[in-house]
Image (tube, rainbow, N blue to C red; front, side, top):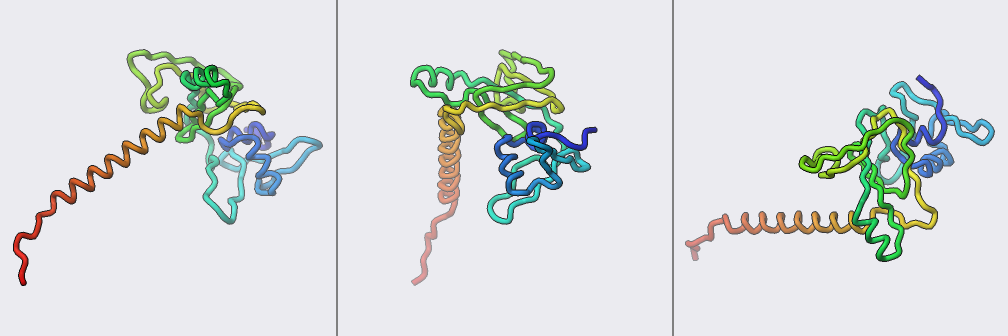
Amino acid sequence: MTTKVYTTEAAFLLNISTGRLRILLKQGRVVGAYKEERLWMIPLNSRGVPEIIPGRRGPEGTWNKAERTGNTFVHVLRKTIDQNRDNKTSYPAIAVKVGDKKDYCHALKIKGPCQIVYQPHQPNRSQAGGARLWIEVESQHQVERIYFSNGDYGPPPEVKEQREKSKRKRKEKEQKSSEEKCSRKLPKSKVRH
């Protein structure tokens, strides 16, 4: 097993972007990392991932703390492609899912074998979020996300709409359940004076 890696592979192992890893390197939060000419050499711990020193404030980091075991799923967002064409925008139209974390990008480099899966009558609801067509990459193979410099960042409008819709449904469900709880309470018929 390799004991030192470069930034691209280290970012892949941590499941964060190379830009985020460079920020952590600049802050001195990657244990044992050093520069060899222009390249960062990053040592791996006993679990096979770089060791990151957590920040003192703010939320806990979302990087992987152990070696990756789950496959990577790649989806092409058809509605986003249509929206980009019609509105002359450039939102990321590729969704990359690793475990519970989902990221969006403009292009993707898959460094190793992968398979394209099409199941028209059995959508994959557990791993691929109900998709019928997806690209599946095994956990040991690297997937590098690429972002356009002039592109729009963050989740595309299609995803924002889905999130708003599920948030509204959740709110309506909570409101309905609280109304049911209120209606179950028996009114006090006898009041003593």
